[in-house]
Image (cartoon, rainbow, N blue to C red):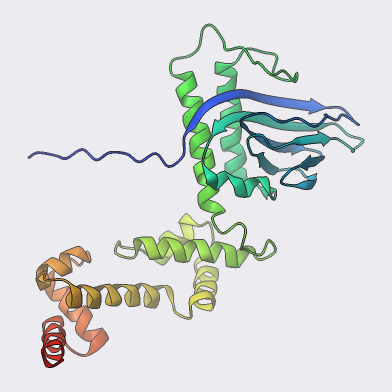
Amino acid sequence: MDFKLQPIENVLLVTKIANVHFFEFPQDYGTKDDKHPFCELIFVNSGEIFVRSDGYDGVLSKNEMLIHGANNVHSLNCPNASETSVVIIGFECFSDKLRAFAKKPVRLDESEIKHLAEIVREGRNVFAPPYNVPVYDMEKKKKQMFGSEQMLRSLLESFLIGLIRKYEFFESADENDDVDFQISEIVKYVDNNYLERITIDELAFLFRTNRSTLCKEFKLATGKTVIGYITEKKLQAAKRLLKQSKKSIAQIADELNFDCVPYFCRFFKKQTGIPPKEYQKRLNAEHSAS
């Protein structure tokens, strides 16, 4: 059997990395306005800082992150009495999707912070110290672990893609409405995967919630149960194919991922009162009459 290799689409590329820093800033530390032709991720590990930039002026608190765009004028200062620790990563990336993260801080969850920590650790394999001194040109290590630079880039790319997926509704979502935001993500996931076998338990696991909360909030958001919503999506897809396609009932059943033709026919008749073949005949008759 000949297998066809499918090309892999690159939707986000980190083309260069300038630095990977972990700073421990003393009280009253501050920087002057600065800009550079690459993006800069800034994450507060402890304490808080005040950020001034073209996209956002305000406080960045513990576990919050901001990404300055290329050539974005920015500065920071540490008003707290206690020391503040901050991760700063400079990188080149031309994805427009990152612009949203320059306008408003996002709070990272524990898994995202662990991912960020992996990036910082891998940065140690690529760059030579010092890591806690503001320098423009970090030197690469002469001897690196195998694949260190590629691993660093891959970790950073997957981190950014994960953030974009999570905060796709970032600008329109209510920051105080976490449940609705999560349900929007779940509805989108179902929209993209309704032809697969999706269970409530699987959704609850994937989106880190429980069955009862998921079912309640999903119905509030869509007006339907999860199963009812998936059933309606499948039915509409079946009607569309029966109307627009010249494919056989067997081909349509296979495309909609039904186990067999009889199961598809039972499903369709239960929802519409008639089998798919009869539905198709009526459509053809109506088309001929018109």
